[in-house]
Image (cartoon, rainbow, N blue to C red; front, top):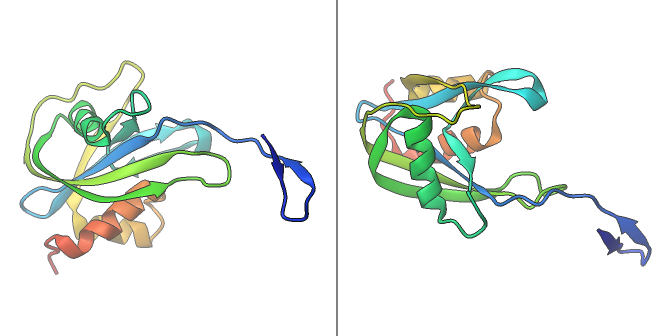
Length: 158
């Protein structure tokens, strides 16, 4: 896009149009969280993340997307979803917003990922996940924000 700059001159800004996404932090009754481990090509690393995915189309209900991604990536379904927040992921070059949810009252089932998705389900205490944020092992922004926002509302063992 061509934009007018504060000094009156014109500049060119390239940006990515994105339909948006939803992410969900599943919380088990014992205080464990469910994350997924997967390889991320753009950074060349395996990451530990909350289950998430793109909205199928602009205007899709983000909660519907969160439910779908939780089921596909982990096999779990949830009876209760609480909205944590909505974040703008990369305001300098994308219009992507991710809607973050906390899922409770979980039931396990079978994982059914997309054909090109290879994820491993990982269960751990919330306290351990927060420690992995502090040590830099968890680096994904949506996951860090989800964990930090959910922590005050979740049981954390000492």
